[in-house]
Amino acid sequence: MNDTTHPATRVAAQDWAALTDDLDEYGNALTGQLLTPEQCHRIAALYDEDDRFRTTIDMARHRFGSGQYRYFTHELPDVVRELREAFYPRLLPVARDWAEKLGRPAPWPDTLGEWMAMCHAAGQSKSAQILLRYGPGDWNALHRDVFGDMLFPLQVVIGLDTPGTDFTGGEFIMTEQRPRAQSRGSSTTLPQGHGLIFTTRDRPVASKRGWSTGPMRHGVSTVRSGRRRTLGLVFHDAK
Image 1 (cartoon, helix red, strand yellow):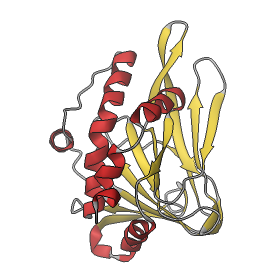
Image 2: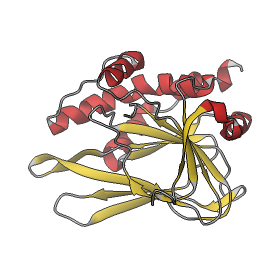
Image 3: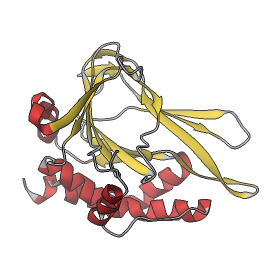
């Protein structure tokens, strides 16, 4: 892997001023390419290596939608570990800014390792990194990835397949409850190797009274054909 295909290099090369503006305005932001097609294929192929995962979730069984996802163990593949470590310091200023606007504590230290230690000390010690797989007719219900009191307000999903070629449908969808207004929805088609940074639970929304809380949920629209696979990066662990 050369410098131009190294995940940390590509994360650092993103236009972080523009991404921050999009996060502040919409609660989500689409990055440029983070992974090559070859890297995407290698990550997607991990799905069938049982020993890499701590558990498998059938979404229909739990009434989460339809499809399947697997939680990695803490022995993360190098590329997944490097992506998390590269994203955390870039997202940290946004997290702290949002906390200040909403008058909330900002418990996140400067390094991901310190934050993970805090999560584990609070009883959230299970890996929350996810590999998701959808086939025709599968979908993901609107939800939030909140696993306990230790919460990081942003996360990332990375597309591993090519929309329009490997699958159709399967847009990433978000809804936001606006203060004293109807909910607002958005949809994003996730290109292969690109990431979508999005709100875990809620975000600050400007109002006449200052800053209000805008609750947000995310999900995936119905896959009409083919196979859609994604990598989910979560910056807090689960109970």
